[in-house]
Length: 155
Image (cartoon, one colour):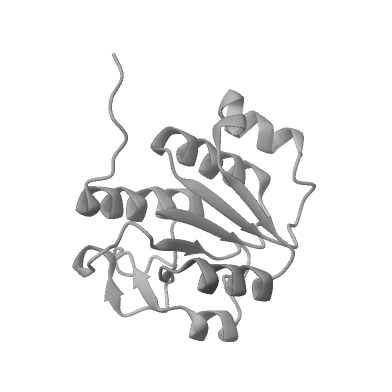
């Protein structure tokens, strides 16, 4: 299982997601362009000393990511407030990639339509969205639980 960040524009969220990925032993794909310099001080602060432990792949565009993913296999699962499929009612596979949209704008329609599935996290009435890092952690946790791929706890 992997996380993919579509044109992230908040370095603290990217750092937090990279730290999550390091702790859960999963890879991350960053789909450029980013809204910040990738070695930004705030991102390093959020990711702390975990960043060197992440299997990080940078893609220069959505098309480059999409072609790479199709070659390697596995599904692209978009987390979206426009989805109808509740994330807990979905069967995850170990080769799935969870795609997180840009904090300020989500993903464009062509990216939305190209994904294999779109998943939603139900929220209280009147609420628009969760922080992207929180959303990624919630759905990743469910995917890892279902696939039994949580990292082993070290003592």
